[in-house]
Length: 436
Image (cartoon, rainbow, N blue to C red; front, top):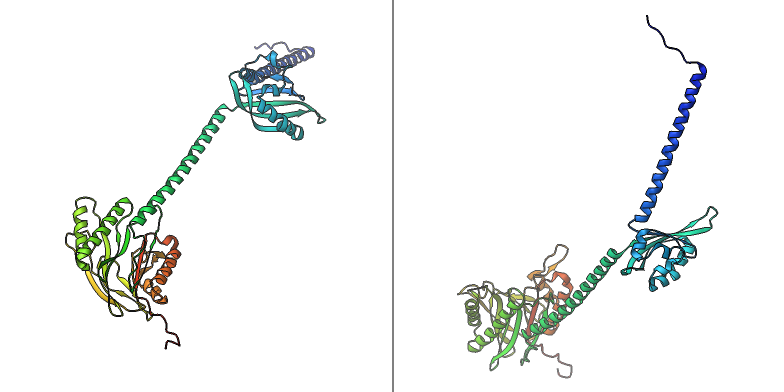
């Protein structure tokens, strides 16, 4: 038989409940107090040892509170600063003036100023900082104090200084490069001029005109032409294009011009002259970096009311003849081989007569290989013939001027230099009524 325990009376139960509630309240009060103390300690410690400077000032700028971080930067004791110095006393002269003329009015107007670059008088000398200030107000809106955060900007200032130096160095390099480019262009222009005749000679009974259109001023082209006397009454002429660009192409151009002139004085037959040039280039460059060119060489022989033309081509576009009657046709020289590639080369010769009003046009392939139209197709020989036929037969000068306009209209579609040489027989002056 089991014996039950004594049941507590009503008064005893009430006392026990009240005791438990009092213990709970005491525990809760203890926890809240501990949490508050911990929070205050953490806040104060964070304020004092923060990685940035903190200070609070009265509205007149007098420092009321400052953390240890800022004091360490300044090399000052708290007693030297709090209540004795104003915030502006911590700044360099320039920053103090800026604060008084810009930051202080901004604080009065808007109540805050963020990310202001200044310098403080640190223990180690001038120290760049970023300052953010905020005006604290009472419930009725009256300003009470100014809280300011000071960020160390030494790394940022060093980065900005390095960035500025980099920009200045880049700008100086750009100016030097631009000056070097201008000098290079001047030198290239002078060298290019030295590879071409300064002016064409006056040929009795003949009109001559030439032009050189540069696709890029930064590259030395290999196009060339010349007109020179051979013997009594006869004149030699040539036009060609050396492969490649730059100084090496210029050296080949110089050698080519000299060889053509010298060979023509020895034997002016066009095929013989080109054969001599082929031998010279092949022997000079076959053992190393191969160099070759295309060229037309010809001889002009004035006759009775006309000028005879005997020419030969080595891999060069055929010459074009604008006739006085308003037509234009090529003088076929297909089959001529590149000059300087093989020890033995075949060249194609042709003959024609220029009558009064006729013009013989020689050109390099920069003209016909220009890219035109929406599809960027080649301009081509057919278009050149049609263009030439459409021009009035007014002589070499007029034809070259028209072609220069055409070349300028190609814009960036012209990616290679173009040389032009036009030779023609002037039309007789029109007769007047009195003369007839």
